[in-house]
Image (cartoon, rainbow, N blue to C red; front, side, top):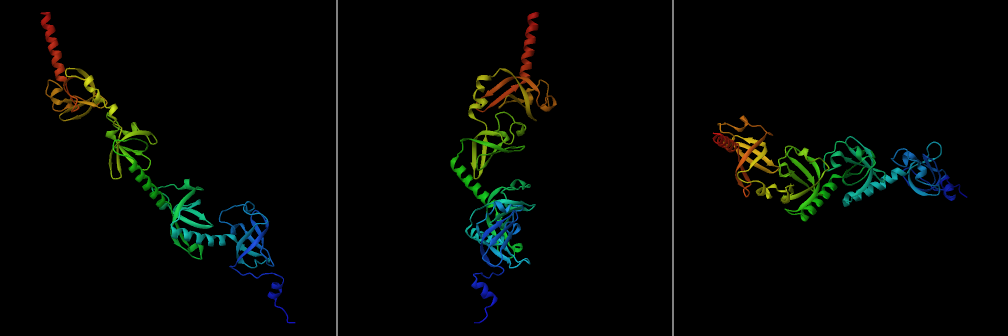
Length: 369
């Protein structure tokens, strides 16, 4: 009888041979906080350390596997010097994950994963133990200086660059969240534009306030509420009226392409609707100087109703320009000398009021005589 080789003796005893890089299956016979021991049907047990199980730090492996579970792993070393087989679950998962990600890349599939690391240049997510980097420029559809709010958050993205490599350090997998947000925004814009028309009353949220107006989020698109459309009255500073987060009801004034102009000038609050009942030629009224030009001053009788006080009607004495005798905010009393509700024009005269006063004084003097 010929002498059997060492390998044949093991084979006769049902003991398989393994080699580095091979994938083996085993049964968990022991699990500690940082180590899993597997019976892999070999002369020695297989060991999966915490660092070879997952990329997530400080994981308690007892919460991941239990005695009796079966699992696959990749052989890293047949003998670690102490007679044990060093295994890696993480590397096998990463290989499978790489294939999974490649399929997602080819199919433009939307993936979802938790952010494991926030870097200065972007975010890192892990899919099946495979790291994917999302550059800061591809995290959002708007510039975000601080990415810390994404820490430990689950986000959706697509893989837009996939360069596989057996060396993880040379593997390049780029995720893109921005493209999803842009697509979603375009869908919302399309839906909004199909549902609204000029003249509609809509409600939105003030997103940003500037010196010239406010941008209002209408649920898919922003509309511009210009300073001149905020009120029937004069608005000097939009921030005096609106702040970010305010709810506001507006009229769709104009839709031009993807631009929406808004207005808060509702017909029912138009002061000119009742102006003819309040103001008549010959009435003496009071108002504040709202603005001035070389030819005259505009006096606000009430918010939305301005009257012109022509420079020739300010005084009997010749005046070169209104600013020589009047100032913004000054209250004046004058007589209405012309009123045109249709044209929304009111003309005032202080000179006429002075003339009336002079006539009254003269009449009183004649009476005394």
